[in-house]
Image (cartoon, rainbow, N blue to C red):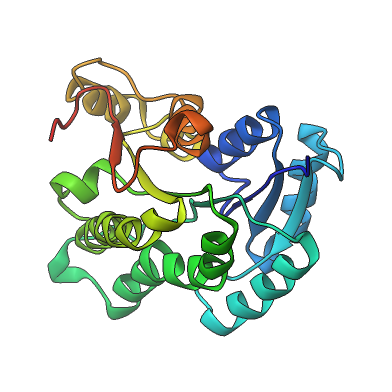
Length: 247
């Protein structure tokens, strides 16, 4: 049986790296996309992790450029011959109050966190439908469900991810393509861990479980939704937020 192939965008980030680990342990060959100007960082990550060429393939891709994505992914599909899982994980924040939000802060977040789902998934979707028994997992956020002060751009984009997920699930169902989302709460990535201790403490006080999520806990939800055990689940948003928001 051919080795299954999974594409992960933003693969060398805090959560993306754990997703990549989990997929490799599950036997997938992972296509790990990274921003084209960050090749040295991506190569250093692969070396640090000790991944082999059989386990991982680095893919420079600007997920905010539709034409570029179409060209890169069309070639990728021809070269790999299959696509079993797509994990849309790439994301950024440009936080500020709405009164002070600049057009570029809005556009950058919408392009990276929402438009990228179309740019990355659309060139692969027809082939995944033809192949059947394939998975798309999109990373949204608790703030796409409940909103967040200072994150009108981010909350709007992540809410859009949920709508995208439900609508595409309806289209993919008859072909055996499941489409689901994972909505992390506050997660202990390097970026969050760098916050001042008092800020972290105040965040944890709002969470019923009184702690941040581990990146591995987010990844486990993604791996489950990518697995055969989840083949009858589609159009769902799985929250991993320690009880912060129950919807």
